[in-house]
Image (cartoon, rainbow over all chains, first blue to last red; front, side, top):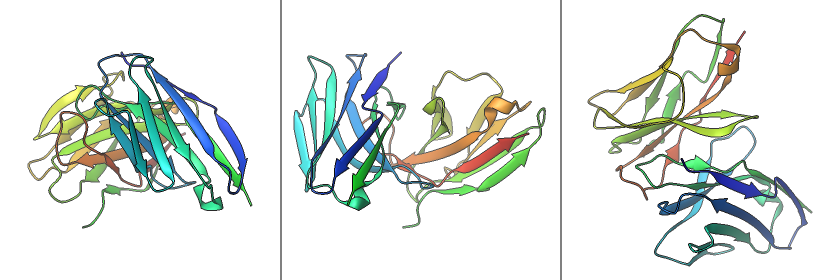
Length: 111
Length: 114
């Protein structure tokens, strides 16, 4: 089955700096890669996603890149703000709505 | 539109008991997926239902089961509860199945097994 690894597990940045979270996946058939943000005590919320026929996607301060050959994808957050502090999960899917999640990255943005 | 609604929010059960969790998807969404979230194992897929049929199943024992009704509402059942079943159970809905469709999560049911 699919295996998704996510790094780093914790990330601390200064407000205004950029943050990068990386994920690798094992199943070359995976074709959908969403990123979720989960604030403490709240539900995971989709922040951006990318499909395998696209190499990069941007939405304001957030961008995701996908390298199918190397089987890795990354989340980039620019101009970080304290409200970006949360746990971020990457995921991969190749079958229905069955997502395999990475272990999560706790992002702390220091004011 | 109302979001995904899960009931109850909190449950405390004893080992050996069984429990039923409920999920009402976003109106018009026909796919309902269930995930287990624990500090040690992270987010793990349990199963997905679409049009009352189970489409995919994760690597969980048969004690975990689910079903979907004609109105797309879904329930999951855990029988013979074990301490390790303590977790946040998240339900997610989507308009379609087949991959590539964003999942919308509910707030979850936090199950504690004592």
